[in-house]
Image 1 (cartoon, rainbow, N blue to C red):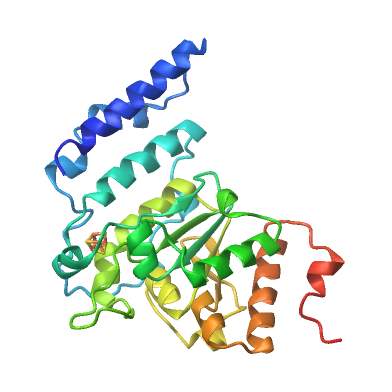
Image 2 (tube, rainbow, N blue to C red):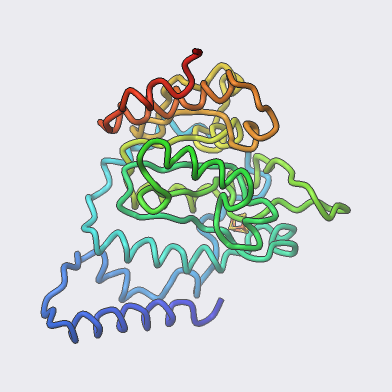
Length: 283
Ligand code: SF4
């Protein structure tokens, strides 16, 4: 997308001018940020985060260095790096069939300063239309779950493994699971999101998100949920996808998800009230 770099540059200049008008004379900017600004945007050279062939299979991710080994970014650097990444991702055209049918790339939503990241699998019809992950019925349920912990959508970061809606040739409705090669091709975007945010905890929503994040699925989500995993040093709690909760109104499944979220709250040192502990206790 020609001009995306200049849009980013204009936004940065506009932001600096507004700070100047408010009397700010100095801003915190690391050498990394300055070199990123000076560098022509990657999307203007190429819109691809990787040159992996579309047929690549999902790779194990255990050997990569810890996310926390990356240099700590200042708040301003995080904002800048995520804005730059968003501009690059929105121009991505690596998966031809998905590009042909998508309305837009669904990048992610929330704050880059989040302690908690929630990762889903791929945009559906509503998300493709709105450009935001988890806005349909499953998204509304996810919002309720987040709010039940005492957080809200603005205090977490939500993203999908796959940024474009999987195409469904010959069908107008319905979603399909992303293919391993699609997830692998798209993975560098969410990988960078995680590296920028450096969350304290992640929640993987559903088996496909676990598979995309960890590069493997040692057992089904029913067995994995509630058991801590790790992505490059970041604790990952696998749990059921909200759309599964919508399809399966079982009290036990709901209780399992809430138990998983309470583990997340404990890991984040969030207070848990008696009311929260007893949400799904049998009376
Ligand atoms: S799914 Fe990911 S890698 Fe493929 S075109 Fe969309 S953003 Fe690019």
